[in-house]
View 1 (cartoon, one colour):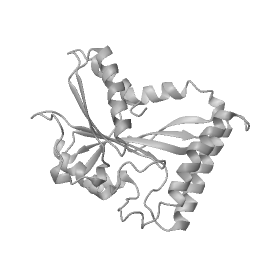
View 2 (cartoon, helix red, strand yellow; view 1 turned 135 degrees about the vertical axis):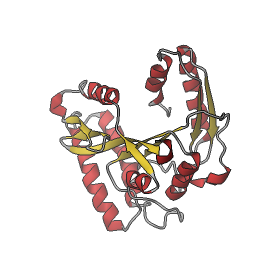
View 3 (cartoon, one colour; view 1 turned 120 degrees about the vertical axis):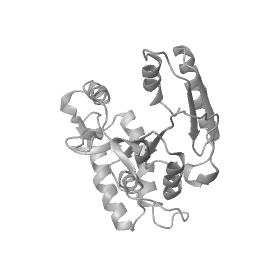
Length: 253
């Protein structure tokens, strides 16, 4: 099931002093059945919280859409638009990333939340992709080794079923000729170039992240990284694994 990041937000919205708002979510992705399942799961969770919720699946990658023709289903005047983006080496959920950026500009969201692996995805020459993947995934494998035994079946499933596919995607099929699609290096840099402004993560978000990391023994080496730009990261022994950041359109300031 996708969308596991949303229940925590739903719970926060449902406990607002003025009552829960109505939430309309449009999910984009390559798999229609996965989107449908996600929508049903989230609708059930929202119903248990007493929150009005609509889910509109679009089985297309964001980079495959014509930005000028996109209409958010059910959007009403005065409603705030929020966009969540997650960039992951396991699957290509966006397609042409420059087109995705144009879509963001067209939507003019009040807030954009972005999660990136701390690894370049810009589809450059093979040597650069190989070296980048080597540094990043060696850290990931080391972090797994600190908490799981070598013969642990859970570790084997993660390494062979997940990480192996990620490495293949980055090294083998992530080159510049990949379907003619344009890739960007770091979305954070591209958002800034296109007029979006980074905003600092709230203290509550920082506290929640630290609470989760504190559930693991300190000896495992995981930590919350506080970026000087207000971003929030997951690290292992000082090396970054994932970074989350929040942005707003300059026109919203």
